[in-house]
Amino acid sequence: MSPPIVIAAGGTGGHFFPAEALAAELLRRGHRIALMTDARSADYSSPVFADAERFVLKGAGLAGRGLQRAAKGALALAAGTLQARRI
Image (cartoon, rainbow, N blue to C red; front, side, top):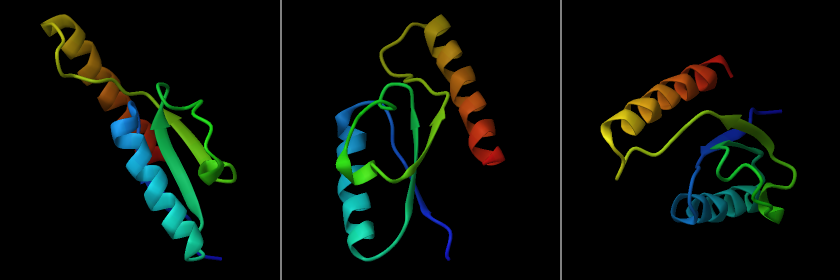
């Protein structure tokens, strides 16, 4: 069996809904999928991802934040990158 195709999407619907459409098409073509996301969309229930393996990674947005929050966000993104590399 071939490994799943990993789809990475998190945060708002602007990123998640296109990933959902891509996953639906990949499933239709017979592929297995896995989802990498962050806590903001980890609990989003979609029948498309019902059987997908899910990985919830650390992450944060950077836009529209003060310097201190942006620095924390950058650290969270770095931690999420390390998590993803271990998978």
